[in-house]
Image (cartoon, rainbow, N blue to C red):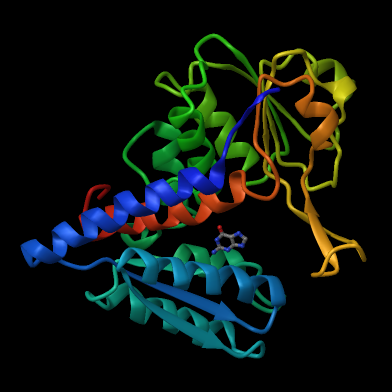
Length: 293
Ligand code: GUN
């Protein structure tokens, strides 16, 4: 059996480390980290994600503010909300939950967020700093994966890391982080995507396979090398009448058959997912302690 890379357990551990630091800050009379989340509209998944982020803030002793805006809010009004939070010294970190309604430019809104408060790591300033290897807020998913690799002491130096998916928030930054010259990096990286030819040939050469393609059970055993480390970023709801909830969650990897070949693998749920919230909390702590800028 492969090593099961337990993101739930690891994120709980990180949350207790953060809670311990908050207790120290409190005892020193320092600034309690404060995260503001802006949620536009009534998208079900977004409400769930933002709710989980706010709850996690409470768990570790952070302060949090949730700003809810109507679907019809104008771009100008949203930009004003962001600017007010930028200027509010009580708030250390700011996230605007994506996706946004179609009439609002994600680029304009992202660019409005003060890089010093951009704990999602989405602004050009933070993406640029991360790319240069400067201190930066790294986006939650890639940062969560890096932390899992570290805490499970996965060897990366000289390994071939294949990333499937080139999104701005997962695949692209992941490929940069795995190639850079400190641990867990120093990999030879291949970034693949929907137009890649002979994908199975490439994935079969991977020592570390990071899958963020957004297609349920896309990666099958015949695409994976014996002994590979497999990280599954996907999460999909599948109807299942045998479950009380009426659904089950699956990833981008066909878990059972791939696990039989892998040396280590992240499950879905309980793998990368819980780590994203731990990363966001960590970035917010860094913001409050002015550790990045
Ligand atoms: N939508 C999906 N993932 C994210 C995330 O990490 N941050 C924000 N702001 N929106 C998201």
